[in-house]
Length: 250
Ligand code: 3PY
Ligand code: MG
Figure 1 (cartoon, rainbow, N blue to C red):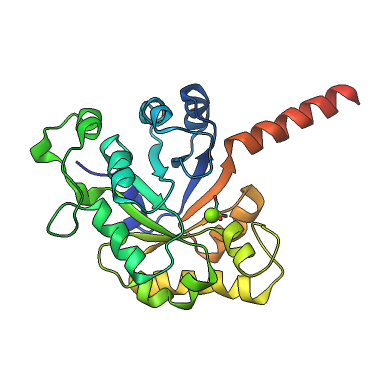
Figure 2: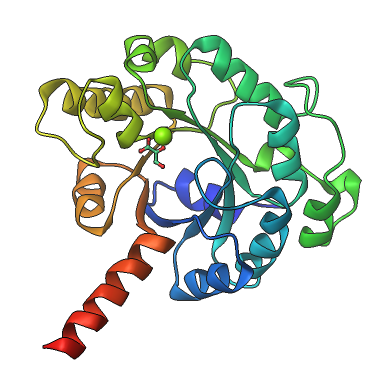
């Protein structure tokens, strides 16, 4: 049981992803058919219930796009449910300390590495395997660093064994620095935090990821990020709708 996204990232490939805030399997299917390398079902800020998550994972799973989930918080029970439901990785928000990162790894892995309870019900059905063939270490455990507190102790956090990657949350990071939320900032502290994450990921052999849009995403890819989020469903829908209206009214 391999994880194609893990394989590509471990081979050093840069990947492009999208964010799903709309809790609907058809919109997930539309996004997946567009050809993203991975799509993330956002249970933190998206209008998505855990009940919506499974049909969305099924829609994405019918395409080559790899499905990930962001749980609402760094809690073992919900992280286990996301992985049991068939997410091939989790991007866990607001990881601020080494203890938070240790809890994230523990939530993703069975003993002896962690304390995830065994019951990958839909994950095994999706993969077409028996429980005995299920490898919990194939799913990606990625933590979001999005506060000044986290960046102040980045080495302590990213040296936690079992982590696969670290992801920049630029909106929360902006606010943490006293700035208005944004994907990029003309601010030395904000920009050096982003460089710090890239550097630490390289030193600890972790995947660096970042939330962006298509324009900022191009810059982040050139900077060396390997998981770059470039489109959020409701935002591109709104932008395309506004453009259509403007075009028709011209
Ligand atoms: C952030 O920018 O803080 C995020 O979490 C992106 O969703
Ligand atoms: Mg955030």
